[in-house]
Image (cartoon, rainbow, N blue to C red; front, side, top):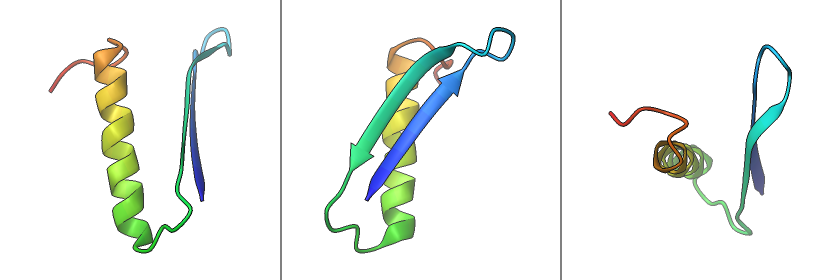
Length: 53
């Protein structure tokens, strides 16, 4: 399974961030999506694209 995330600048439609995660045995799909979303959020905070909570 591949989860790909792309974030675009609205005004210029320019790609500003892209990330992908793969898993060969997703098992519990809702859990996998939740974990991937948390990892993506953490990366975006680390790169200062989102404010820390």
